[in-house]
Length: 252
Image (tube, rainbow, N blue to C red):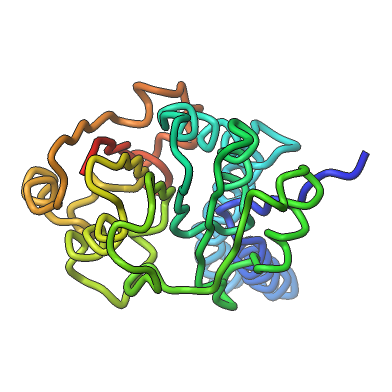
């Protein structure tokens, strides 16, 4: 059976780069005599790269469908928090279309629009989204469009619901994250529903969490740590992964 191509949030290029650096350092060290100080210095130099490579590989495995499947579990969690009486849903930062497709599968009356910049740094594409939607039988319910989360090409109040998973912290062109999130809320209709998952507790990115929440243009907001909704393995609870992950949901 042909399966959809849902790439993980861990880029394979990063794994390859750190693995290559580790290997090169070790190869150079291997050419030196063990009594040489440079052998030991290079060995020490390789340790952080070996550590990062190991963490990336294990994290990739936990997110992947062939491993722990936690990327799909997270999408399922977010989709389950969304009410199913909506007609027009927007997925900001759709990636390979996994969340948009899952929401469409949950309700045959829903139309989901997925937007993404699909930059070269990521291993996603619009064509990949369309391929996955066709494969999963929801191509007529889904639309995919290239756009930036910082300036959505939609009029105010265009959607009944908006969702986003681990996208806002990646938009480095906008430092004021409250204004970035409010841009997504702008296209949400009055009393419309939103469900966002991101590293909202990371103050280095989003600032003070309470201040962030107070600046959002929403009438009702609930904040729930991801781990309260989904039991995570230790590697995904680290500060380099989903330690700061929080779901904020509510209504405009």
